[in-house]
Image (tube, rainbow, N blue to C red; front, top):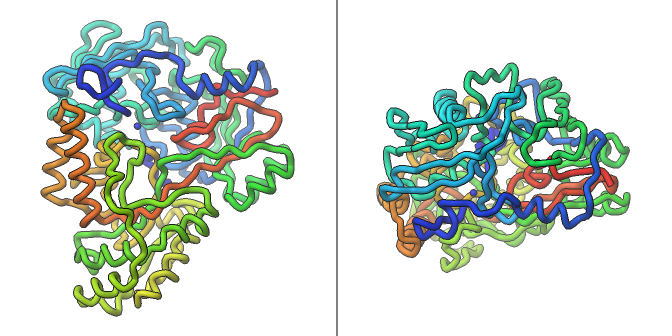
Amino acid sequence: MTVSRRNFLRAGALLGLGGLAACSSDQDSRAVSAAALGPSKHGGVLRVGITGGSAADGLDPHHPPTYTDQARVSNLYEPLFVHDAAYNLQPVLGESMEPSDHGRVWTLRLRDGVKFHNGKQFDADDVMFSFRRIVDVKGNGAGALSIIDFAGLRKLDARTLRIPLTQPYVQFQDELAQYYNGIVPVGFDVAKPVGTGPFRFGSFTPGDRSSFPRFTDYWRGDQPYVDELVIIDYPGAEPQLEALLGGDVDAVDNLPAERVATVKAAGHNVLVSETGNWTPFTMRVDSGPFGDVRVRQALRLVADREQLVSQALNGQGRIGNDLYAPYDVAYAKQLPQRQQDLDQARSLLRSAGQSSLQVQLYTSTAVDASSVTAALLFAQQAQAAGVNVRVRPIDSGEFYGRQYLSWPFAQDFWYTRNYLPQVAQGSLPNAPYNECHWDDPSFNSVIASARAELDAGRRTRLLQDAQQIEYDRGGYLVWGFKNQVDAFSSKVTGFVPDRGLPLSSFQFRTVSFV
């Protein structure tokens, strides 16, 4: 969402999850791939144009709702773990995590020799402070971290924490690998932002631009390579593209797919990343016509997914099957691919007493550049089944305002996640972004069992059972997964395809001038 929560883990050693409990390498695939592009030089000012931004922009590491916010916090702060470009878990400020008591207690070991921008040595007190702040300020990660038993949270030594949970959660480490769970020092003041990231705070004008000088005491050796990072907000894709072509910025995110040829013709580079990003239609299952599962299934059968990918995404993506988390090892790829079936859709609507269904679809370009196009195209497809979909585009302030999460029928966007972390964000009764108002007792029970299941095979079966329930009666219409398309100048190097956020997950520490 651009009121983004948004945006990962395989499972691990002691749990039989394949690498969750401990991380073995300090070099993620992003850094390795960037190194393969050639030697990096120091110096220069990297100017990056990011879509969106407004007077409401901020520097809060635990609530970065927009692309511009996410770009800033990804360079000022760092989480304990992160997913690399191939979506494998890697250590950052955390060194390892070991579970016990069936995933109810975790022992976290921290990286040594890390400093904050103000010179403070990073230690366990900062982690405990950050956890409490995330929950207290109701940050994007509050829903997941609220299962920490804070009364039992213990500092064993300066680099070791004992983290008890109120319920077992075998993929808890995955929750600590989200960009919005950055670690800040004890006593953090967002008015004077301090983190451990590759760039430190310089200046910030909401809705305009911000600057971040290189942090010379950064723990990753000689990174970052540029002397300063400047992030510039742009109201739309065209002025952003003009800035790249005119040499005013060195990289831009979210390039419209139809402008790829323009960028290449100018001698610049296009960065295409295959991701698990999804832009669903969201149906409230607790009221109105969408309270009837037959109506929800009818609309899923209305969608021509190939046409949506081909036209709304200009072919930059792949079709979906009303399920999310395609990179999760438990992804239910065995379920039949849903195809457009207008006869069956009409039949379901007749049986639900909705043969002349009229609905309003709320959308905004703030959701995604292709969202309005997808909404209009879906409305055309629905006409063939006798459904009148009235598309109502609204501005981002209204869409993500007080009515957000209350729209009966709308759109949204989500970044790549594995299944359980995504469920915790949007598909449980207490999830912070339960936009479908989904509260299915059978689903909730299966998820509770899966979160506590140590055996990887049994957990996979449980997660596929949960996906079957969502496939049969959930509120999401997941028609496709979108490629992330960005662009950068021929004068810079270090950007690599990444399954996370735009522009190599905004990891500008690996970028340099050629």
